[in-house]
Image (cartoon, rainbow, N blue to C red):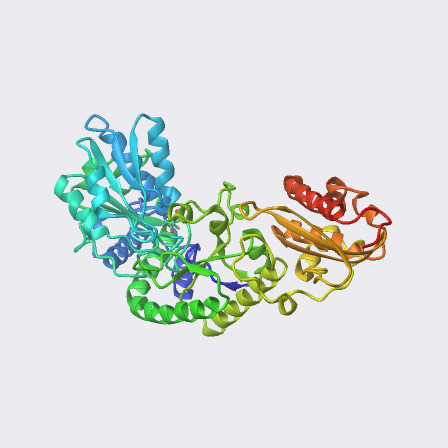
Length: 536
Ligand SMILES: *Cc1c(COP(=O)(O)O)cnc(C)c1O
């Protein structure tokens, strides 16, 4: 199998070869490895490389080199601002304004400050993801210390109006911070023209190494900050510790390249993004998140009707993309950004973020669009009559070929994988075929819906099919049960239950609740028909 197509550039980017070369020259005995704080020759040489990188990073955003502090990344930069400004000025006020769709790098330090007695206003964006500058103005209080609104949202790519928000903060004398991790290198960011006091950026989103980033602080804004760590006094005492020369030098080269490539990257990627959307849109039942707002070209976030989030992601294992699905997040919650836009939990879970970059090709985009169309159709094909579905798809074309599987062949996990890929017995048994028992459980608002169709002759099951919308384990279990039924007595269908099924198929315990829905559907099915031995 070929490696997945990488469409997750908003999560991180590969290091550009020129960046890697520059970094290598700072590592070995023959390179600029000396401590840049040392006053001997090799130390001064390393320090000079760092100052060169500082100038390169500053130039990318229109800053002066002395306005750049190197950190470990945008998370640290944002923590430094949010915690540093609040704690240093607690005697002046205890209020902060931010938005609900900020990165956790801003939300989590805000949450920390609430525990320390600060108040935080979390502004809701409109349904396209834009934070209204008027709402920011309305949230300001006499004791407001800081406003933090991101430049570009990392999930949906929407560009916030930071020029307007920064201007009104300045007019009110409130410090303004923006998290620009997703905008720097993608769209123009010029602190010479934008009224910004603090700006966070990071190297690994612009083809530089991970573990290094920067905080821009406008001249004079330093006085508003207190450091988080204390030590050797590097970076003006704001961020002490031996500077990682190789990381910083790599970041500098990446910044220089970002400035040079920005226009080319932008138009090329925009064309690929449009091509991807055109390909995905053909599936129907898709929603482009942030559609009406100005967006960066690198990010395309799409919600899919009538599919379950985890199954969608599993089915698309040939693509490296991000998802709004709870199962893939550390917190177990569906995307809070899409929820803040007003998407339902179910739709938020059934969402994919495609993010494109410098090395994305048209072939990859065409392949990705085709994979999405095929897998969405396949998953929708096993739930053609799901409650709440708008237009049932023709089931014949999309439902997989029948055929029984021997569940004992191969490892257990592999079985689930294979059952999920093939979904034997998926679809419906049409009316008029004979005595068909039907029953279902779960519903449109729930994460699982299952319906069985059993064609019976007296006590004997002649054919069995299922329709379902659910996670991969749910679909695989329903497929396994249905495909094993033909030829057996219908009473046998419930001889074993969810725990036994889970053991046989290796379904994790936290999914057991979903198997109970399958059992309910099966019970309802068996109850639905004429009694034993009775023919219609
Ligand atoms: C990636 C990202 C971060 C985190 O940056 P790190 O350098 O990984 O700490 C913060 N904010 C946004 C918007 C991001 O996209």
